[in-house]
Length: 160
Image 1 (cartoon, rainbow, N blue to C red):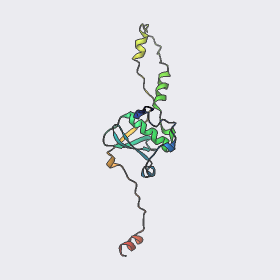
Image 2: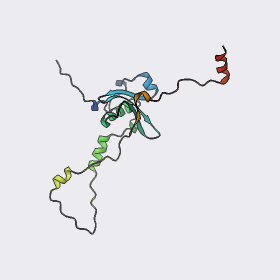
Image 3: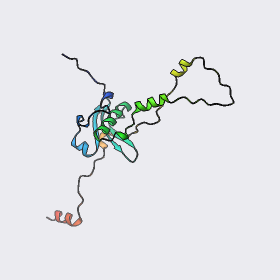
Image 4: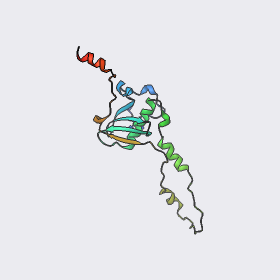
């Protein structure tokens, strides 16, 4: 018998995942959002094109690494991988960027302990995905499903 492999939540939905392997409700697809239960709780996530950010609804704030999983699920499902910023590639890019040494009239001392200096070097990504907490899952917006009617049609319905 083969042992069961448990995949950590943050490793779900790699960018190479096929769209057909992701299951989502018809209602979520209609409203162009994804819904999932993370280790931090239930989350609903959508994308706002005007602010280039992901919007999410949850009972409490969610850890960034779990929001990254939901964002990957979103971009795979709706085939828009260009909006997703892969933070690991950005981190590698930041690590490869050489440190700029300023030349000036001041004395620069020889670094004796270069190994320990490099360990404490802080690296930051230039780009990252932006997530905005929009409130509890109960407060999520629902699109209007009614169709507009004229006053004459309304009057006919009321007096029939």
